[in-house]
Image 1 (cartoon, rainbow over the protein chains, first blue to last red):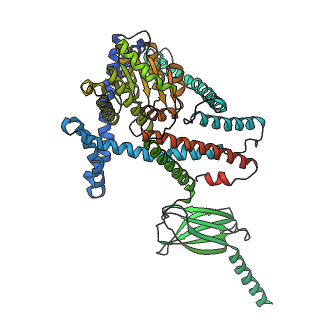
Image 2 (image 1 turned 60 degrees about the vertical axis):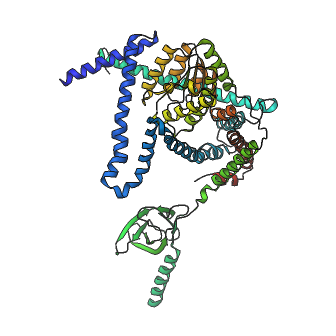
Length: 213
Length: 367
């Protein structure tokens, strides 16, 4: 019986893979079915996941097991209930309070976090003697790092029009960005090929048994 | 002679003991849960140094064994703030005999300020002051210049195109939750786009994959329609939830793109591997596309597949550029001042490093 469900699972997986691949030709009923199954199943899965892996272990269990030590969890619980007020049109304004709290907290927390990681740490990593190094390649790399950082920041300066010497500097900055994008594109394209290989291995190995997985 | 030798032996032992330098002090810049132990036994010639903690009940706990005659160790286990802790350092020879030993006491204390982060505090104060100053400047009516951001010019073009063609506008505020700044920036732009769509009576489609984003996006779109004076045109179903699952969401959005054939697609927020799938499908359906993200790994895909791309910081500047609201403009101008300071400090720091002065780098480094 177990073997039957294993084979059935592989067949369903293979057919759904073909249904999704059929989108490469054009939108069609097979793709629509696969898409709706995917969206519906995943939505259901995340709903159950939220209950069993977030709501129960983080709120319900601590409150029922030791209320005195965990009563503070009632605050986020209350905020969650306030979010649900959106379902009642006459008091849907209540849901704005938890939203405001989340956005305000996020802004405050990330202000310092980004100031540290994207400003101070970046600054200290770039403050160096670019001419010190064991070999020419390292020195050239360090000089490029300094020029790229400087011109990149100039590109993202919004208070001055990009013209004259400032415009040239900003243009050099965008060239640095585009070169890094090109390198990243090639790198990620290779990673995507490996995803395709994984799917082909499933079809040719698990499903058809032509190759050894 | 015998007395002299005994005296010499005892004197040597005392001398050795005096040469064993061992201190215990509160570890600075913490919450009072660690003790900093330092030792210097270079003159004794010990093979091993054994540090033990002397408990109140007379027991001893091994803290650290070291073969380094000079060193330090931060003890973070079993230390309570404001409670004295006693330690003993024993210098041992190769056979394990005790050459010298010393006992010290220390009390751990919590500090209000972490002085290792002074540079962060200074930068935060400067930035905050600059932002507040520019917000008040903008409120007082002072003209604050912001350069043109090409990608944002597409909003009017896209809405106009959608109106002419009678097709909808698709907006995706990324795939992360509301605790990500990119999502918040995306929703700020959605506000302006929805207002423009309401004015032109263009249909807006906003699929989302997070419950908090769903609530916020609904609120944002509703307010935009109110601002445009078209509350009657607001469609509560324009903003809807698909699924939390990354690729389930992508499959759903792809289906919407090929069936609804939006005139314009906006992908503004945080994206991962789905970026190219979305952008390629939108490109194939002939939509005019504007994307923006601060995810460096996804920007290349948007650059190649979209008509306009907001790169990193441009996404955050977009809402200020579009709204021209004083607090957003002031915030952007304050950040620009921060960038100017960054460039000045960077230039100065590199110059100092070249001439061999490391003060600035050491000061800025957060330990």
